[in-house]
Length: 90
Image (cartoon, rainbow, N blue to C red; front, side):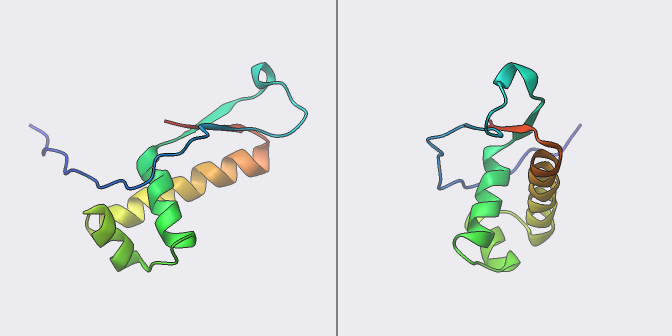
């Protein structure tokens, strides 16, 4: 039986849920799905300028869990930017 998932505190709800390269129709693009918790981890680190421990505390997760979440966000954002994919926030 898997461990129960710990509640992750998210203080940000984006108004915009899609980003895409300019001039390319959505139907032609592959989509990278970025979760709200990945977006929150990224926001805390780069907009609020928090270190890993403080950001993890804000999200109510361990530092290793925070590191896993933000690492996943880095990979997805890089994939979208480098390979010209749309980003969908779920």
